[in-house]
Length: 107
Length: 117
Image 1 (cartoon, each protein chain N blue to C red):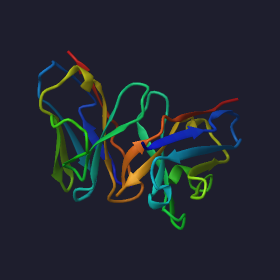
Image 2 (image 1 turned 135 degrees about the vertical axis):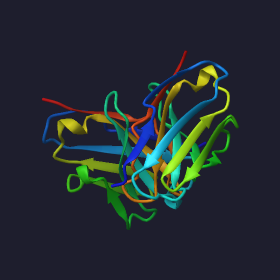
Image 3 (image 1 turned 30 degrees about the vertical axis):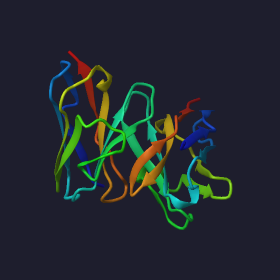
Image 4 (image 1 turned 180 degrees about the vertical axis):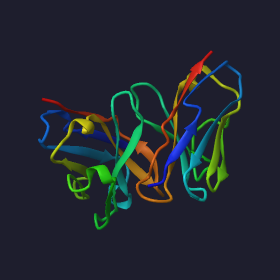
């Protein structure tokens, strides 16, 4: 199985900050990567697909980049409603494995 | 509006069985792959299984192979997960999700399965 490693595991930032989360795959997955946001007690929400494509309706402050094994997820200006846990997921090979998550908190 | 509503969760003893259902509406169910994803309490997401539009292809994570069976009834717009030989480590919230080109673009609210004696 492909292992997905996210860093950091947790992150504290201030409103307005630029926030970056990285995700590393254990092998080349091309651009077959999703990013999800999960708020407490809620189902995950798809934000980014194909590594860099913004899902319809998702604010433009969210972005993704990367290919191969190294990927980055960025929030350009953190808003209070962005407090959540973020997960990457590869879909190059089955099973479609997730990263362990990055919990984002407001400083 | 796309809606996915899971049901069938509950408390079951180790070794027992449970069948989860997911009722889909607001889209052409028979046109999409569907998935089950689970989340143990306080833990991350784990992809469990998926199924092709016509049910002809099914894939599972190794930890549930031989114990869980994913199926669908396109006439009833429903997805199922038959879970047998349940273990404590299967305790989780189980989500059904619609796949769009392998991305889970819509999710249900989840149903909690607790395996305990």
